[in-house]
Amino acid sequence: MTTDIKAALRALHIETPSWAYGNSGTRFKVFAQRGVPRDPYEKLADAAQVHAHTGVAPTVALHIPWDKVADYAHLAAHARELGVGIGAINSNVFQDDAYMLGSVTNPDPAVRRKALAHLLECVDIMDATGSDTLKLWFSDGTNYPGQDDIRARQDRLAEALSAVYARLGEGRRFLLEYKLFEPAFYTTDVPDWGTAYAHCLRLGPKAQVVVDTGHHAPGVNIEFIVAFLLREGKLGGFDFNSRFYADDDLMVGAADPFQLFRIMYEVVRGGGLTAGVAFMLDQCHNIEPKIPGQIRSVMNVQEATAKALLVDRDALAAAQAGGDVLGANAVLMDAYNTDVRPLLAELREETGLAPDPMAAYAKSGYFEKIAAERVGGTQAGWGA
Ligand code: RM4
Ligand code: MN
Image (cartoon, rainbow, N blue to C red; front, side):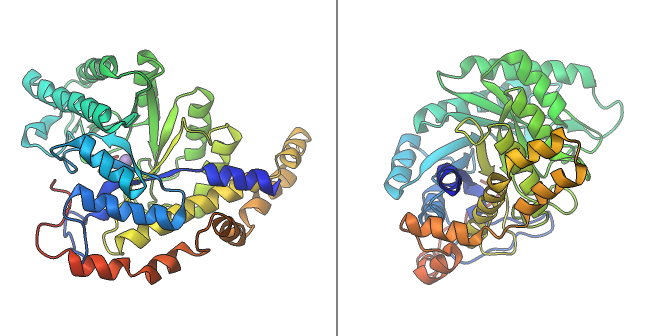
């Protein structure tokens, strides 16, 4: 039993986002922190630290153009030297003046062409870096009733998606991300999992849905969405983060560790602990130090997964079949209430890591080193 759980935990692979290592903030203020990377190479070095101390974060997602470099194959080789690989390529069609009224759904065909060209450039970057996943998030939408034709925007979206789909190479896929609102406040062109699912279903197996846990209305049952998409073979992965209000992008498992457990239970139940489902973090560390923020987040996902794996599935099935409402609930709660930290510490020690990644990082001297070395230049942030 524990051997199986440990094997599953060892195989767990959590991807960290390059942008979490740069400066970030709210629309009111971006606080600069010491030691922050000044280019994508330094971001990868920081991500490698997270992997070095946790052992389960071997890939890093890139965001283009935030991580634009002259030679992507060189960047990928640099990552390999550091002991990590390039994960999902995230497109960015939300920071150019041209996109004020939308990118791929813009009423102006010239803007749509520009946006599509960027998405196709991202496919080229996948080929250059060896990444197998493209993540598409569109800020497209409208602010006022009547502003644009809701239906025509869906047609434009479908057209762009099918052009990207056609360009995907062998073994490549794209993940379509939905988000309830923001920056658009009236309609959003991909506002929910149903819209994303319908577009992906039409396109075929290389198009899947990504669930960003911060992109739902309060009270939405995210684990239901996860169970449904997994059952349909359309769950491509997660953008993990947590929220108290809207898209807060706080550390995953910080606001609601119980929700994270419920999500991971559905993943385990649906056979989703495989390479086919990408467990990515999409967070910003506005006020906390960035590398430890990522380490803590990785540990939170590990803990939720360990608890989900501990659910006594036979006892649960028996209670469910017998209509034993309280018994079934108790089986889940027993797993959730188990302290899995000793198990994870043991697992790390078995693989030659320190039992406490937070303490090991603090002791490593890495922060002091980057704070001293990374002076001058421009710190990485949201502006590319
Ligand atoms: C969006 C979405 C995307 C992320 C950007 C920065 O809200 O979550 O995944 O790339 O933010
Ligand atoms: Mn996201």
